[in-house]
Image (cartoon, rainbow, N blue to C red; front, side, top):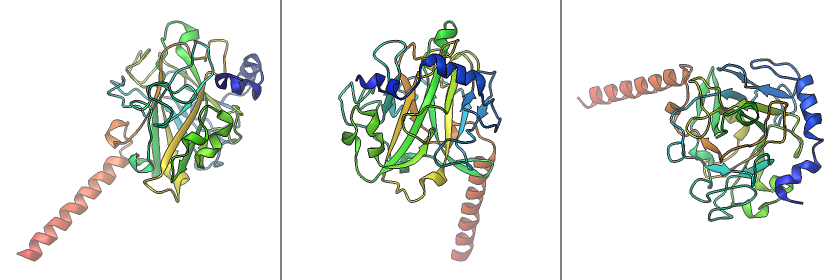
Length: 298
């Protein structure tokens, strides 16, 4: 079976999934038991899955709209770039410097310049209301022309860590992604199931129209506590699936590359004030230390 279609054996028809989505929707900010986080409403919008993830909440990962400008390749600096072979494909990929150059494993593209290895120690720590997170940002790169083109489903995200490079154990087989290492976060607790999914609208953002490449569309905050025991030198593998849910208004991949970047600088995401407050306290502490040292030497 074509790896890009392998998920078809694990899912019911897209029509059935559309009915499920219509019957059970997690509205932004809601904590109801349901399967969909709908980020297509006017931004800002965010939500978390109440069940069905790994680890089970709380705490929970947060999916949110975002509008980082500019966000084109070279500025956005992705660690994962992928694209189905044709419009409407279910597409999937995971970051690795292996499998290239150029076309990589699964639907990976542009290895190893814009799809490459990532390590836990590369990630910035983001403070949101006292909870610490790592953050990953998506530029969906949909056209925004018409309902069928502007929407994209994010059907699964699975994050693994490993102290060795394990990408060649998986290569093009989605059923083997568990071999990447220790599972740190899974949008769906069971591999191959996409009951927990997110719908994004590439034409909506906190800053206006964002179709195509050039501005980001969604950010995922994953609690740092999920990575307890991981070393900074550990490989971090980010596996994702898009386009499995075709809603009446669309949801499949219709345009260019999807790109994910890791947030490595706290200045690159909207701040609630907590991060800056902690930074201020840190600078204040350094100032006090320097004053004491000067006074002692005098």
